[in-house]
Amino acid sequence: MRYHSTRDSSVSVSSAQAIVQGISRDGGLFVPENIPALSREEILSLADKPYVERAAAVLSKYLTDFTEEEVKSCAASAYTQERFRSPAVAPLHALEDGVEILELWHGPTCAFKDMALQILPHLMRVSAQKTADGKTIIILVATSGDTGKAALEGFRDAANTRILVFYPEDGVSPMQKLQMTTQEGDNVAVCAIRGNFDDAQSGVKAIFTDPAVAERLETNGMMFSSANSINWGRLVPQIVYYVSAYCDLLRDGKITMGEPINVVVPTGNFGNILAAYYAREMGLPIARLICASNENRVLTDFIETGVYDRNRAFHTTTSPSMDILISSNLERLLYDLAGRDDAAIRQLMGALKEEGKYTIPAAMHQKIQSLFAAGSCDDRQTADTIRRVFEKYGYLLDTHTAVAVSVYEQYRRDTGDATYTVIASTANPYKFSDAVLTAVSGPSDAGEFEKVELLHKATGCEVPPPLASLRGKAPRFTTVCNREDMEQMVYDLLHIDTK
Ligand SMILES: *Cc1c(COP(=O)(O)O)cnc(C)c1O
Image (cartoon, rainbow, N blue to C red; front, side, top):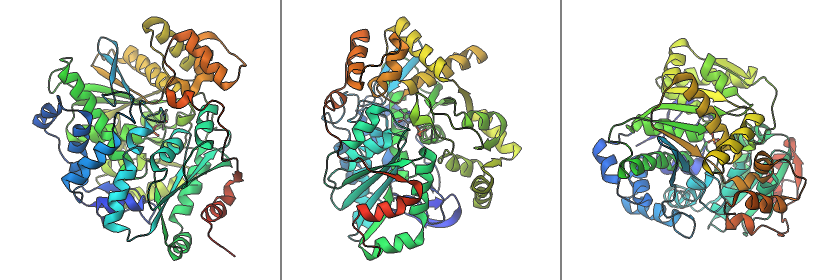
């Protein structure tokens, strides 16, 4: 299987190259030349298999330049019982008849990013052996909070690798900040920037695609790669848990083979929901993909109107990992729906860059509406959903998952669609203790860990050990820089002399 760039179909690389490079030199994203099929027999045969085997089955369809042994060993090293606090890795929790929560936060950093970032370093190591001829790989990350920590944890002390993370100074929760600034490991660095996530992401993307920067790294025996969801190696492991959820439902007799399910995803950069789209295109029986946004409802408006317009106020919400106005992975969907027309994508992405806005053709918009439903909710509705769901079911949602549940409730009310539904739950509630505690028992001006304790007292829900153990830990990384200084910061952190 070869991979093309969304902005130049003539680019053709192996999956190992796509993973090591991260992004195409033309600024486009790597996409597989076709979407491989997953037959009903294969799905059925995976129903009684553990997560690692389900992962190997899906990954091997995309990573055709990896041997079967390599794929298996990557999956087995990533989804271990030491790293994931649930033997199922990504278990389902039945909220009520026909509505399941897919818990994607049992990994070491308590957010769904672990699902991909625990395996990406292994995929990267194997890919580098195939392609990178001994260069040190520099993982450059822009984060809205969860990717940064998950990438740091995944890549810490990985051989021949260094990782640099930029996060928006005021755009992450206190727990997220503490998780990153206290990160251990000899090959890690973390820096805050003055700006929001989009500033961090476009800064990283600019450094990443600048040939002069690449050359400077090259002369120092280094090369960039990315752990953001623009990296294909991030996306493909995310397809697995949708397949796995379907397998669990089959195994438990909750659905029959071929029965379609709806999937609801709290969305920011469009990576997680794009993985669900790929699962659907592979043949997983998914009816509707329901895209949930917070007040930054750029995707909801896009799906409703066919106009993507980032020229709008940026809202800082209680679901910060979804505070995004440029959803990078949408480009991959558009490429697919445009019949792999790279010129059309260059034009749309050019308009986004120049005018912050583009309009898709009517036929493409119709196609999107046939696949996706969308909705949004504000912080008040988010808090209300957390409180109601806890009172009714005794189940505690984090703010991001609450956005998804709220949007699902609206969708169900508006459409009456009672299809079996899986809602992706993207973080443990204790990562956002302030907002969750406020929702459950009213505001508090206690410190972060007092809030964790208060929330535990109010709900009885277990505090995950990786969060509890951060208490009292001193930050290692306290630097803040301006967006314009990010490039220099990269050189400083890598000890590259620019004089
Ligand atoms: C990253 C993240 C999201 C958004 O996922 P995308 O793949 O960017 O759409 C939602 N919730 C949480 C908790 C996240 O960390």
